[in-house]
Image (tube, rainbow, N blue to C red; front, side, top):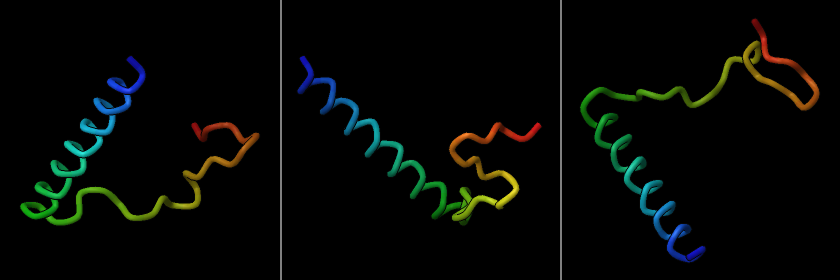
Length: 49
């Protein structure tokens, strides 16, 4: 059962990667490559409000 779940998860990851590539081909970069420092959460920090 675990093997099936891992294979299914991998397939879903690959589907998302292909969807992102398709969107980027049509629209350009849709996801930022970096996160602004003010939004980074380090261990022990709380989320900014």
